[in-house]
Image: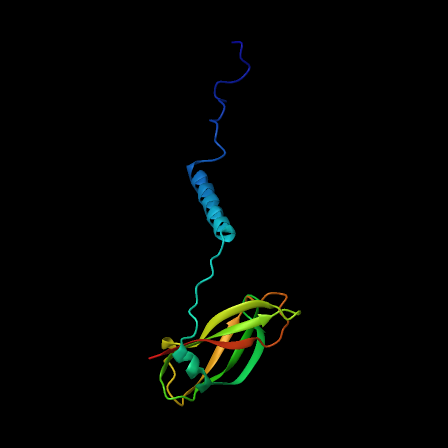
Length: 162
């Protein structure tokens, strides 16, 4: 009887700080962080954009932009959204399937700081028939802080006929 501890007070079994579910969760988080880091650090190859075809280049004089304006608002997460709105008219004699434009934003020094290609006419919008006018709305929520807050340059990037 040399022990001062009662027999019923046995030490509780040792518990490990991490069980299998916690280890799996940590592994998944680390793998996800690795994928995000890879995607952010990997060199981005620009998407090859086809130049205007000679046929499209000859036709762009028939495309008329009107009532083009810019407005800013906040979206549901309090992020600033700049919208370019306007109308496009097909004054030619061909049915159009797609019209895309470059929106070229500049910084305060007049240098290009964002050049984004966006559709203003698409098959999902129903194309654009001869003599028809359609409105467009182009929201941008990714403008750089250095943007000079002026209307971007709008340049026809693509015309596809149907």
